[in-house]
Length: 376
Ligand code: UDP
Ligand code: GLC
Ligand code: MN
Picture 1 (cartoon, protein in one colour):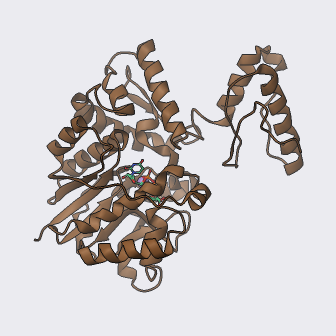
Picture 2 (picture 1 turned 90 degrees about the vertical axis):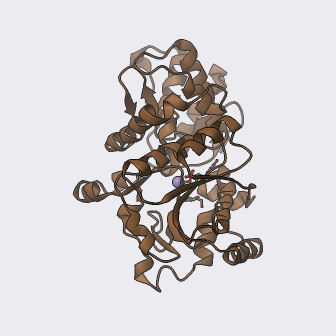
Picture 3 (picture 1 turned 30 degrees about the vertical axis):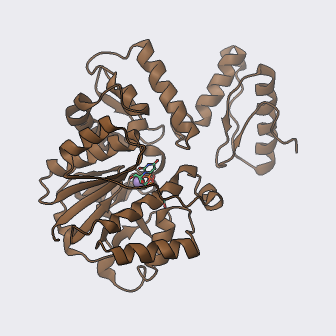
């Protein structure tokens, strides 16, 4: 009994890449505390070996899934039901206190002082600041708390289908009761906030301790140039470049040399890239295939390579239109105009008989252009 630990979770080899970079980032800033990772059967044994080299504990747990499709659809993240698996962290009673950190976080400065806080301390969520974001939180392992939260989950569910909704329902006095349980935002700086409030990022960015690559900005899904060593941020978010670059620098230095093609999905694909040389055609094809798989699992790069502009460009290319005749992508001026323009796109795509998937802007439905677009 006793001791403090940082805890994260990975249910597959792709998120394990995040966990590995996170662990190295914690070592890099000289944390005094232990590192623990919860893994599920989806993590290959090869990957577990690599995790064991940097984490002091690799603990297998079973998958807990909310299976709450309706609320997860509202969040547009069908895959996040399994974030209920995080709850297993309360069972690590060999530690006295822990800080849970998502596998898509990166620690940029030592923040061991977080262990002075009490359960449940967390930073506000950027989408709804009266809720805390569950990507970073201080907790006290306890079998009793684990049993109590899981019983609560079975009875009440989660308002977002993931752990964040559940934990905010369970620790429901967080917003009002005790300000010392509100962590400053610099301990969970959501990368998407940097473009919604750029002046604040310019002012306070230097103080950031933990970066959280929420949503589509997962570092391992961004395009990385193997020749120059530069990562390309998602379209329209150039200020994310230095943050993503830091992740990739640690990845190239500490993680890439450890990867094996026997690893699953993107981890296996990235094992095959050669740093300092341009990607081969085979490598590009392999990574594209893995990226497509990520899309199908719900990780869509809406603002980047899977953006509507790129899909539109592909439609135009497919139709081989001369540049002067290229129709411009629809503007979201009024609802009616958008509707009729969407109809036009559908017609064009139908004519081209492409098998593209159209992701319309500001709308989380995925419509197949080939005949399933409604005709109103
Ligand atoms: N996670 C995982 N496998 C998945 C999805 C999520 O291991 O397929 C874990 C991982 O630790 C991740 C956390 O659950 O960081 C929460 O998911 P994510 O970070 O993708 O959610 P976001 O912060 O983008 O809302
Ligand atoms: C959030 C959090 C993440 C959590 C997910 C599901 O946005 O960043 O940690 O797992 O939602 O509730
Ligand atoms: Mn996260």
